[in-house]
Image (cartoon, rainbow, N blue to C red; front, side, top):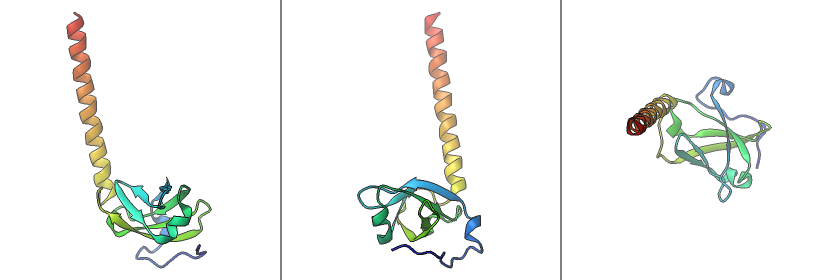
Length: 118
């Protein structure tokens, strides 16, 4: 069942919340954001389709608001598997540190390969 109005939330203006476009998982309609899994019964009929998520970047474990790609409100999806980051900033910092770590290892491998060729 689709709703045409936006629900009341703690945010003063939902349009100010970050927006993510994701594909709902085909078997149950759940969505994944920053490693966390979100689900609601309303998402089942959107399984396998792209949906829009509005979320509080500082409180990702509290749930997300879900919309169709036409910006029609579907419902709130609760965080059912807290396996990722609680906030966007921590996720970004982790991703940056991970990229730096990988880059450093690739540079070390390349340096060893160059040394071995000499």
